[in-house]
Image 1 (cartoon, protein in one colour):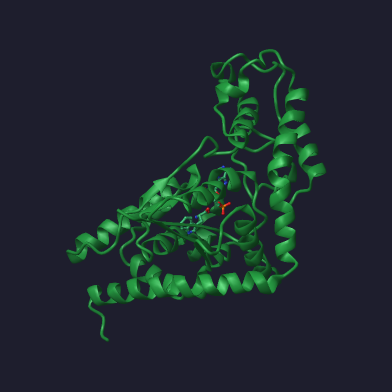
Image 2: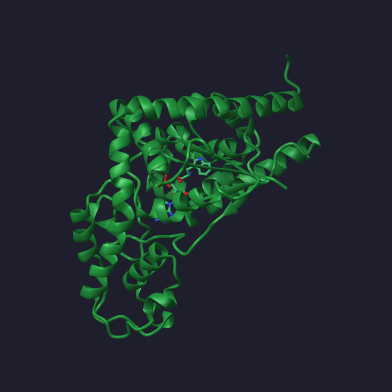
Amino acid sequence: MSKRILSCMQPTSHLHLGNYLGALRNWVNLQDEPGSECLYGVVDLHAITQPYERDGLAQATREIAAAYIAGGIDPAKSAIFVQSAVPAHSELMWLLATMAQMGKLERMTQFKDKAGKNAERAGLGLFSYPVLMAADILLYKATHVPVGDDQKQHLELSRELASTFNTRFGVEHFVQPEPYIMGLATRVMSLADGTKKMSKSDPSEKSRINLTDDADTIRKKIKKAQTDAEPLPANVEGLEGRAGADNLVTIYAALAAVSKADVLKGREGQGWGDFKTELADLAVAHLEPITSRMRELLADPAQIDAVLRAGNEKANAIAEKTLSETRDIMGFWG
Ligand code: AMP
Ligand code: TRP
């Protein structure tokens, strides 16, 4: 069976190493799987669920598209599109919202995190964020959705909404999307606190490596990363209960595409200073070409816009068809 692969990121801020290792790098590999069709979106309608700068939104959208391309997404193979340029996302979201239960949305951990203590004052957009995400996925009848570990719960809701709809109308219309949570670094942790996820919204810049950071900044951030008093252990068991240490070894393994056990081989007793220097070299070697390609792309916004327009056209064609079928199944006039 052929696969349709879809995933998205929000144009909220610069992408970081977690976005790259947990998601983007896998997206790149998937576009070469025979028989698979890939669509990658920049979800700007999701980005406005939290306070944002009006004047920076279009540029942030271009920046994410540039990161996709610089990271290896080939617009000749995969469609890169902008969510707000495909109106069917918003319309399908409303249709699905009529079938989504408030109780389930209230249990979403991302909502709880983002709404904070005062959930009563959170916007309806933030609350219904996972329903829009379900619309993003179901609209394309995506079979596989490559994401980081933190999106598992949202994916589960998308699967439930697909089956609720199909059962309600007695059809096999929407496809149940499978999460693709791949690789070693499905959850990259903060460099400042190994028990917290590396996140765009962490106020501490030291907590993450951005894809736009230069080599010097990457080295400095890794040097300051949290470890502990013990040197590197002989094996993976020796990383248990050592969140900061485990995180650095995981990042190394993911970048070098080897297992954590392989990273630790021959390193028993090595000090973190030396290990961090090696890790920084590896990270710079990986990220430098992406960063410089991104800079080149951003110097020519017209080129990015052309890629997005072509992607939007492809996405609209698929989305409009599904939406029209959906309206029909639901019994609307016209
Ligand atoms: P976001 O930063 O929320 O827009 O996430 C975009 C993609 O990156 C999603 O697939 C996330 O699951 C993934 N992602 C975000 N943060 C991390 C992280 N710390 N580790 C691994 N994947 C992540
Ligand atoms: N919620 C995802 C995140 O925070 C972004 C997203 C929106 C997404 N729509 C999607 C991911 C559809 C995969 C498929 O990272």
